[in-house]
Length: 457
Image 1 (cartoon, rainbow, N blue to C red):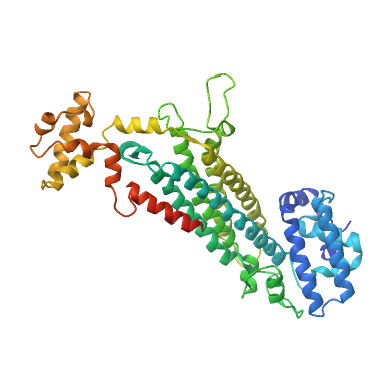
Image 2: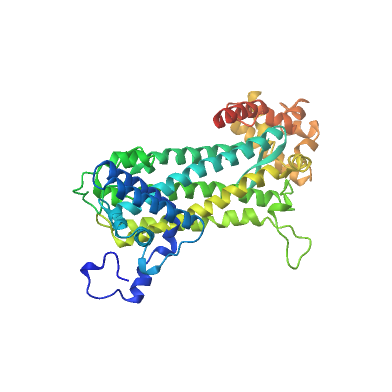
């Protein structure tokens, strides 16, 4: 069978070229979006008097028939037809005859594929927004149960100050809130319609681009036909947002891995999200968060791949752009899987509150509060800092923690110490004292939870 574009050529396409240049192996994922765009296009052609009513009806019915075959897995895609657009057009002509060839009036594969990708990204972005919100909800539910659960807070992965576990979880809530806002904002750029820009310069047919834009749920048509067919910013933006989002997922996954280890023993992940060892029967491996952490590299790679692809392309469409889809699909599917697993894994994890409290009773993370104690009594903070450093060193040498030292031992370092130092050093008091806005104090965490609920609506 001849190519649908074969009139100009005197030889058939080399078989290796045909296989190498074909994109149907991956762009068939755009099949339903392609039909959706074609239905809007043919309806517009009828409304503008470019096609007759009977032609529009025949083509529309044919497209719906093909759509059903695709949904039911009955459609056959051929490499010889190159891409999803030519495959569907070939099916349409076989289904309804030569009138099917009129569907392509007033458009090109260039604006057609761009429209398909805009529709795909619009659908996926709306799904990701909901999935991110599901993760936020899971974090908030855990936080509500653990406002007064105290864990060590870390800097440099060294114990720094005790904090509310809810405060730690809510830090991720706000990271994901920014991710969600970025996704929501990106819809402004996704919701532009390339359809009707044709190959690069528009078309001589009296089409109505606003009609197809509205029919497809876009906000407006692209103002410039060259930009419409060559713009891939909306995919770059998605890959960029996804890279930031997977970074947050990876950071949280790293903490879940650490916390579930025997060395920390702060949480227990549900068995449904762990696996065992083929040789060591005692093992319970946090494979899901490890894979979430590991998937980060491929999403970063997809972003760098598209940036590199686009950096030297002249206007308008170039065959290089065939390479824009696989990274988009891969990132979309990777992110979908990650977010689908993350929410229930967080929601079902068990927090070992007794272990976290024991941890803050057996460290020196309340040392800053001694410095604050002396500073409040009038000693310059820098001098107080130096004194506390010596106290911590002394306690380590004596194999004691700060709450184990006697008042006499404290007063050997400064006469400003009184009996109330022990109250100041109690973990609950240390956390509660940090009542500045956004702090880990229990009152502030409750305020933060209220704000988080309002944010989710």
